[in-house]
Each structure stands twice: as C-alpha cells, then as structure tokens.
Length: 387
Image 1 (cartoon, one colour):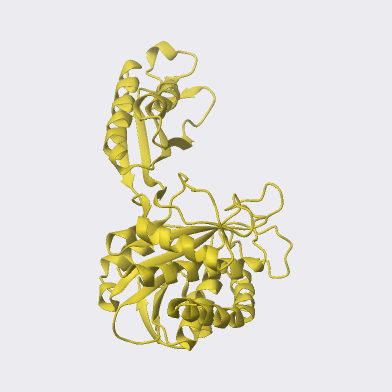
Image 2 (cartoon, rainbow, N blue to C red):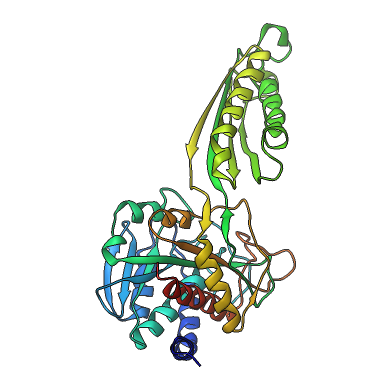
C-alpha cells in the first residue's frame, strides 16, 4: 500500500467515526431551516459542530472555517446554508414547520462537509469549509464570496462540492468532466398594445393575443436556432394579463428562464429571443420589449480533477455513474473562475415521484455518509492534481 493510500485509509476511518454526530447535526438543521439571506443560526450551528479551526464571516450570513494548518495551500469544500420556501410533507420526526424546507439536500451537504472538516483536522490536514449563503435565491452567495477575494488569501487550490441526486441510484456518484449545469438568464417580456372593450376588438391592438403568439414562437429558438447537440431550454413560467373578461388591456407581462449548457450559445439565443419578441409583437400592431437578467454561468467541472475523483470513488467503494448533465443551475459555477472546481452528484433513494424541490423529498440519513465519501474522493483527487 502506498503512502497516499495509507493516508487516505486513515482519513476515511476517522471520517466514519464522525458520521453519527454528523447525522444528528443533519436532523437539527432539517428541523429549523432558514431562507436565503437569513441563515445566521444555520451557519453558527455548523461552525459550532465543526468546533475547531478559525472562523471568518463572508457574504453577510456565510462563514469560512479553516481547519488544519492555518497557512499554505488548501482544498475548499462548499456546502449551502439556505432552504426553500416549501411546506414540508415528509412526515419525518424532524420535519420543518416554519414554511421552509431543506428540499434540495442542503442539510445533508452541510452535515457531510462538517464530518470531513473534522476528519481533516483530526488527521492534521488543511481544509477550508465554505458555508455558503444564498444558493437558492439572489444575490448569489458564491458570486459574493468570489468577489470578496478571500479564497486566494487561503491559497485555495481547488473547490469541491457534492449534491444529492434522486435520478441516480444509491451508491452511484457522477463526477462528470466538463459542463454539468447550465448558464441561466431570466427573461422579462412586456408587450404593449391599445386596450379597449372586448366586444370591439377591431378598435384595439390586443397585447394578449400578441403575447400568446410570442410564447409559441419562442419555442423555435431552441428547436430551430440552437445546435441540436447542444442542450438548451426556454420556459415561460409567468404570464400576467388583464383584469376582466370583457376588457382588452393596454399591456401584458411575462417572465421566463433561458438555460444553455454551452456558454457560446448564450449571446446568440438572447439575440434570437429579442428579435422574436419585437417582431411578433409588431405583427399584431403592438410593441414588444425584452430584458435579460443574467444568472449563473455554466458549471464546468475541471477534467483532471474529475478523473482523479472518479479513481478515488472506486477505491472508497462508490460506483461511478455515467456522465450526468442537466439544465439545472448552481452558483457553485462561480468558483471555477478562481480555481479548478468539481461538483459531483450523489445518488439517493426516494419514494416514487419524489425529487428535488418537492415537499416530499427527504434523503435518508445514509446520504450523509455517501455525500461525505464523495467529498472525500474530490478532496483526495484535488490533493493529487497538484493544482
């Protein structure tokens, strides 16, 4: 057995010892979730559970916890603090009752990161735990942490994350090279016409009819303007129009989301969307305007780090899943601008139909162990890469 393997076995053994306390932490976090931007108690609970190292505030409600040697290069592990505005319906003893819920597994991620941070400290290794606020809602906590330029001060050589994923079986982990989550934009559309009586439509310029055609025409952007090999999604999720059955309004509004997996498609798709909104509305005698609110960049995993993590996953008894990519989004993508980064997806068993962001989604406690093992694989892979 090589020195690296011996050291990894030691770290793994200590990590296993930390898991029972991590599971208890998970229960406490799950029962008392906090919304984006107000995660003070959650951050403090996790920092207290880590219980060692130096603690530094960041991004208003976030914390950085450095364990092991205080100077020199280190690997960062990110875990998210915030919960969703979802009313829990899992029936679990630790169910939340405050209208918020860890319906995306953040409680599991935090508990797993805590276990790994404590194991790193106990074995004399350096690790920076990023307890990040505002992953679920703007403004992005990850972007604020990157903009604060605090990670270079810790000589962060890589950033590792892991996310529960019910699309994978338990025991499977996807450490996929390249783009795994999409770049996102919010689209805000306003169509202005001339309102009037519903019984005299010829005297109006109906913005509702125009917007209906705009929504239909926008689907052509993905199907006819983007390379079919490139993943892209355009969804209109909100429409606000009218006040009564017999009144044609002057103006209508719509809000949608645009997602592309390849950043090179982003500008082209924006141009196509703007042209369709303006020109289709004009065909109905109306004026169409569109505003783009830029969201996260694409999440691109470092190829070398992904390959190293895949090897360690096998050594640690996890099965490497087939490549997993989606048009979901995660502001973990911002960390890739400052260091090699890797986001892994960890399979969790769930009742049929339960998935992320649903009120019945609750990974079992063994997910804490699986996520911690995945984080350990990424951590060891980062140490090997010498980045």
